[in-house]
Length: 96
Image (cartoon, rainbow, N blue to C red):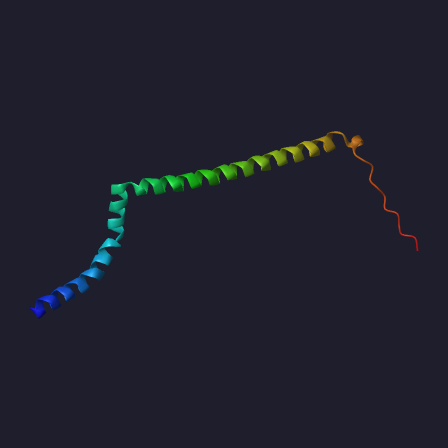
């Protein structure tokens, strides 16, 4: 009778790590994700993050294009109308 109890204790002690390895396997995780739909939610969150980053990059590019346009307009005005440029300021030497 004691050997049956000892055998059951040994069996449970060996099954615990084996069960932990099997349940932690990537294939089982993938199967459970597909079965319960958590993979779709994770993919949607990843996609939403990517869209947010792309929108931020697009805003940055829009501001850069606007700044370049303003700089180009300023340079074009300087090149087309040189007489409208402000006179250069002369630096007076300091008095000793």
